[in-house]
Length: 226
Image (cartoon, rainbow, N blue to C red; front, side, top):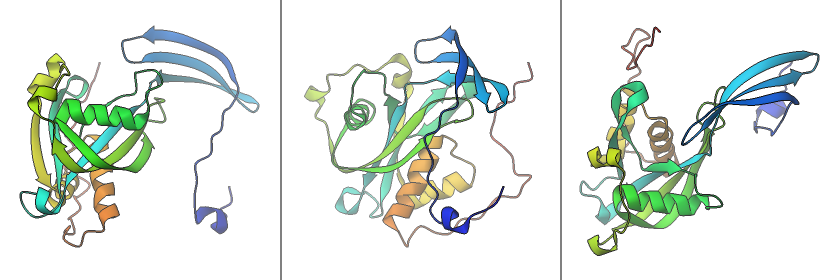
């Protein structure tokens, strides 16, 4: 493999698809299914098991200026229990693209209302990413929501699911959220991507430099041995 400096200057992912010789659905659940496929790589073949996912959106709700209680930019975080990792995580509002034909922005507006009781007058795309491209087709778009207003109680016609009853909401200074990410206190990927992208996009001078952890730093994870 030879590096080409002119190509590396502005890398862009390419939509590529190798021939699929065989595809089987081995599991179908409420949200996603599991596929196993035989893929032709030139003269060779490979088996790929992956999750087929409808995709999702996430939102960084941002208070600025007079909206902020502290005078500095603040982001809204929501705590939610995530059973696969056996932990309650700080997250940002997010939801599946599981309504056929629904526009991603409309889905984001719906999720912001349902999970945070908020509307936003200004919307921007922060970043797009694949959550686990080696094992899932899930694509996620993160929006930045600004100029926020609280939805009046009589207009809150949506129903929250049982797990959402345990949610806790907290406004956190953007600089504090950045520091918590680098300290290993926040682990949800949408928060990590969304908060760091917001700090970079705003170019805030008051986001303090962070200290990196040593390689032997504790890792917050559940190890499955079975």
